[in-house]
Length: 214
Image (cartoon, rainbow, N blue to C red; front, side, top):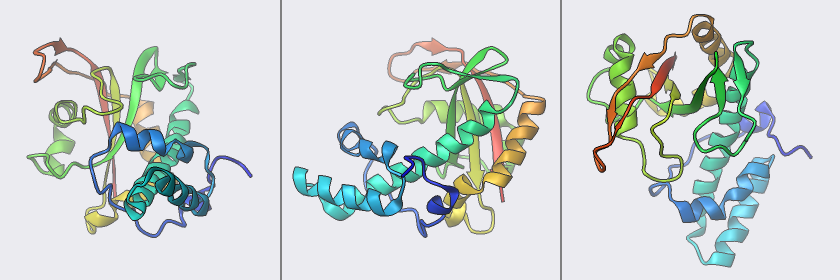
């Protein structure tokens, strides 16, 4: 069987389980099987086996693995939408920490996330002021795993009527294709100034913000 879930397989997930904890390096390492698992059933089975071997809370670890599986494979399908555009070239090192592709020669990491609940302004404000949202995203990113201050393209998802269903927009590939194509036709890139709140170092990344709103 292919190691890449089909859209139908991704649609089998009826509810996105909560992380249950902050994403952390040990559980990330133990759930690496999600990268090469094509079906939801196999993810659940391997999560249960791993939890038993390492004496983990089985329901919590299964939820963690399912969420990683869904996020990873939807991310890759969305990434392919960028890579299919003539102005985008892939990063040859598929394990690069901070670069997924090059847009008109500029390196970018792709970040897909829900409109952040902790953001101190409204969605309408963010859409009018994407620079403000992008700076907030850099300043409030997790220090685990993929933390970095390089260039990023943010795809920001939000379901306006039922925010709890926003996660489903990660697999709404037709809608995503439309908004990504619109952005890439005339990309707006933002020059940011980010001061690291721990080290005091100053970074000046480029960023783009693409809103996918239902």
